[in-house]
Image 1: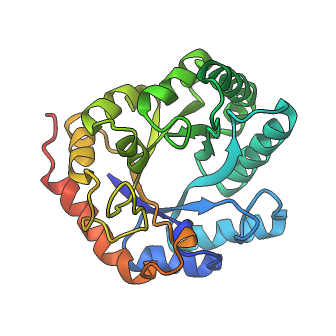
Image 2 (image 1 turned 90 degrees about the vertical axis):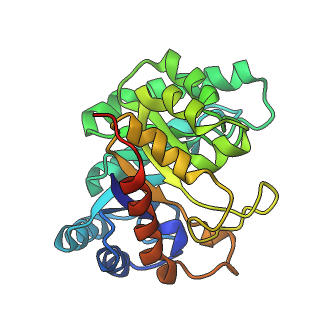
Image 3 (image 1 turned 60 degrees about the vertical axis):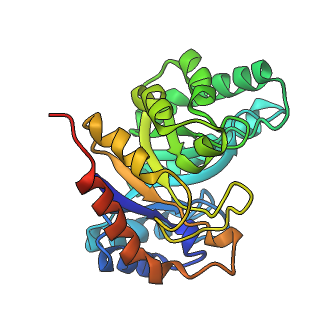
Length: 268
């Protein structure tokens, strides 16, 4: 399995420093938070995009994904959501990232309405994503935190450039075991976000392995299937500024994930 970290853990860090942090601790790639607070987002110009590509290529670090904030199941007109999705797809293409992360964001809407809007919008952006060589991934999050909720949307889309991102915190918060989440997501799975927390009530980020999330079970489920994709550590420092600084945790976290992968049984 290949390892990445999200720049949510290092808010506002310049691209050269992100690349150096990845190489210093043996990460294969990075997930870039695509928000105006960050160096790279849909409003970033072509010169800055090209410079970032050069930085990451020189460091031997892949840009795994552009983590956007489009909410595809939200109430309201389609056009603003589709414009946001298109901007994220183009950013990912320019950076050489294979994936774009999007949220459901359905809130308390009736599930059928939220699902239908999400499926329609994801279906509409799918041809652009395919042309760009990018996959748009719906994260297990908020209104659709369980695998079964995300799959309910992806089924009607039926396009191989629209898939799923497994955030292990949210499936756990939804009461779903890894042995249930993974088989449901497997046909659609782009990559997996890992993290750790103290409890369902206290979701401030912790060093990997020091909290309650079933990370071993998640990696075990992936390994038994022969899955060899990406694990991305999403350390939510931006939302918890008093949490420990990510750079001091990056090395031990990578070693922890490598240990889980090495210890997990594999299908032969």
